[in-house]
Image 1 (cartoon, helix red, strand yellow):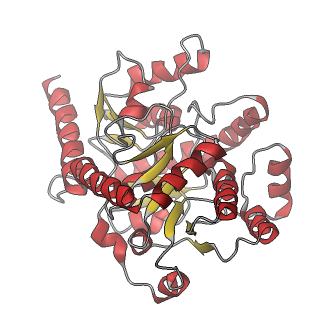
Image 2 (tube, one colour; image 1 turned 135 degrees about the vertical axis):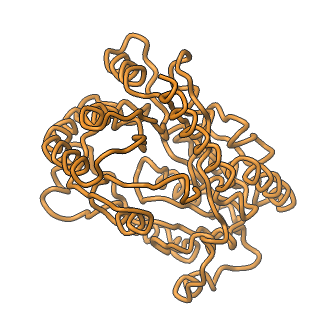
Length: 380
């Protein structure tokens, strides 16, 4: 966004993102910001209700950080919440900052007309947000029909993601030219569908398909220690790097899989891929889909109701059912046996990405929302 139009300040949880934010403006970081999760996948039920204990523990840190932000930043014109799970924290922030709020919705919300939790979240939407932004049509469809929502897609700048990492190049140099290069980008978590991908790969390799798999990502956090063991006991720990390694050993697949870990040079990976797999359990498209599309790689996506703004089934990629090993293997098989189809879908995916996910275009759309909200406030 133009510097003359937007002067950003940030309140965030501690983490690697702080370094990036600090290049854009002043940052206040805190141990945690309380959330209330009512997303389609991870809403509270069973042992997941225990997660609320963490959010309550974060509450004093949340309030303290907001007070510090008010003291350091003083007046702000707008509050921009990065995900709707933070609506309760935003409600608190508005007590200190008398400013209109914009809520970004990045996850598919849980739809339940008789759910008190959904009613509570929808009440916060209507009472707290002056504007709501959804990242795609799948997300928008999960929000209340009477809510005024602007769909502004996430964005990607391919040139900034290319880089030239000799270490990464060394990890990818042994990819066989004849093989279909299949990519996976994300944390190594069960919810990301990595276990289904491993099983599909085993089936296809036993059939004799010429495939290689590039896995970008790692465990989301430490898998050791007492905390990790307790979380795993309650089913709240999903790291599976060790299980992935064991599976590859057990089935002799190490020569087909390239585990490259995390990388900032993601474009360097996408440029080597033929197709991307996004087999997550979220039943929604994810960011890697359009990132790969900028490099002309089509995607296999676990989504039951794909919307044409992110995936056109059998044109820019293939939609499959979440958690279905058979459908995932079948989609990879289609690309492995018809490379020209893979290229055509990759070209169509590139056109869709350029139309919907251009960083300058979407920044301008968001800036227009900012200005519209401020204009309405001035009239009042």
